Amino acid sequence: MQIRRVLSPAAANDEDIAMIDRRRLLAALAAAPFASSTVLAQSPSGGALRTVRIPGADVEVPAIGIGTARRYDDPQGEDALAPLRATLARFVELGGTVIDTAPSYGRAEQVIGQLVADLGVRDKLFLATKVGASSPADGAAQIERSFRNLRTDRIDLIAVHNLNDVTNQLASLRDLKAKGRIRVLGITTSFDRQYEAFEGVMKREALDTIQIDYAIDNRNAAARILPLAQDKGVAVMINLPFGRDRLFSATRGKPLPDWASEIGATSWAQVFLKYVLSHPCRPIAIPGMAQARYVDDNLGAARGPLPDAAMRKRMEQFIDAL
Ligand SMILES: NC(=O)c1ccc[n+]([C@@H]2O[C@H](COP(=O)([O-])OP(=O)(O)OC[C@H]3O[C@@H](n4cnc5c(N)ncnc54)[C@H](OP(=O)(O)O)[C@@H]3O)[C@@H](O)[C@H]2O)c1
Image (cartoon, rainbow, N blue to C red; front, side):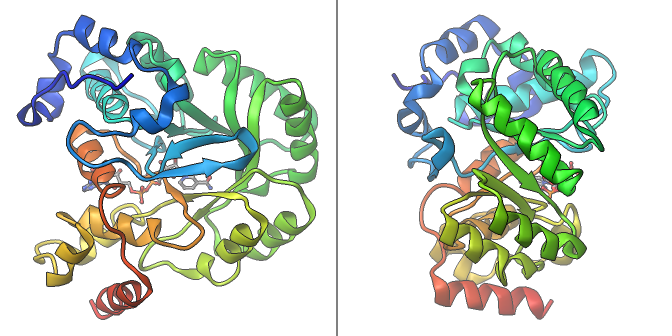
């Protein structure tokens, strides 16, 4: 069943969304379980969301998720929580499912657990977190805290954060997967200096997902790691798709180039995300989003055309020349 639109397009800002009739939203969300993700991905604001298959979980998820580093780490009081709740509500309303968090992001796991419970949307989401520990015992304790923080008895994805104690932690994650407590496992990094080791782990371990930094002005992952993931059929999540503020700073005050309309991009964020999504490994990008208007903007990148190889080159040349 399709999620019913409960907001007008004009209501798509944090303040308005925070004030919507919560009962109507919850009723609409409850009508559409996560299992029907392709239907969920039919956006009320036009065009289906591009989806990506996660082979290990045999599930399709929309190609844009929410990253929760920094902006979800310590909201103080309802004034700080309300925009985050509105962001999540809007995300689910538009068919989004993937949320990426980590035990090292302050209280972000707890905050997500609380907001998901407030909205009653656990079944609509693909919750991804990480384990960053130096021993199997520490990792196991951290993972049990993640289950409690996220208020769930099944976490969709746990990835070894920045390759910490990677062999031991992957063994533990494999055990959790066999028990059905997690659906898929993987590894993450955002550091060039880890790429060689990261590639080694990809070659020797059976992984469902990888997560790595990649952006139109940060393309090193495309040299070897993204093609390797594609060869191995591993799902790819992209962190830092904007390089935090780096790409917005480089383009601030600049009009969109003429070619943006050829790829259906109406904002710089959509230009940057469409570049990422058009990599042949069919990645999922997880931009940090703590405002409902970012959700509308960023999910827009998963609709409509994507650049082809020639356009990707043109886009790179444009950004490189800034
Ligand atoms: N090793 C790892 O595992 C690793 C490392 C890094 C990140 N990550 C994950 O990847 C996620 C993404 O990274 P990130 O959040 O650090 O950086 P990012 O996604 O490159 O940038 C996020 C920032 O971009 C701005 N933004 C988002 N959407 C926008 C829009 N439509 N228009 C204008 N500005 C927009 C926001 O800035 P403002 O909030 O300032 O407005 C937001 O905080 C993290 O949240 C985390 O989940 C994982």
